[in-house]
Image (tube, rainbow, N blue to C red):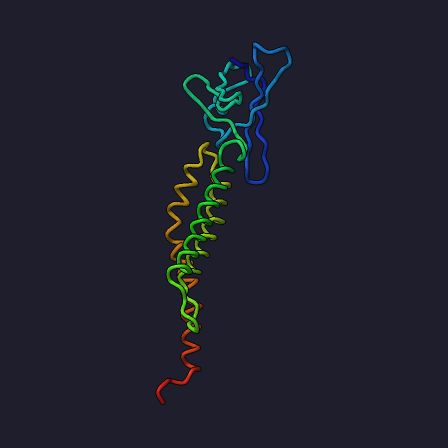
Length: 191
């Protein structure tokens, strides 16, 4: 159990940061802990006043949430500690790896004959994989602080197909344009 000794709201441009300062009864006098609350500050933060008793919820010796009566609000954790950074690295590795695997597969099992124009398919897979790695890892890293990255991963899953289609078109269009220009320059055979 802890006692709320201070409530603060820091304004930084358009963002607001909510802090509670807690004093624990079982710690030496003067030992206070300043906690940044996650979210918009509408739950526990808005309900408590100076002198109220709250319960800290710990996991692996780190304060993860504050409970006041029936209300519970999570505390802010940095992207390194809440799983977003490892999740972003995993998404980047998976997407770029799949892009490279797609590129290798096309070059290995569907090679371009000598003298033919470069096929667009291997480039499409590679570029789409790299775009998903960059965009997906950024979405996971910079996504909402929901504690598990689930919202960011759902957003990335819904944007995967449009990104893939966009980069297939992006890879197909220059090759198709190049083929039509070459076809106009080379005289027809048989004449």
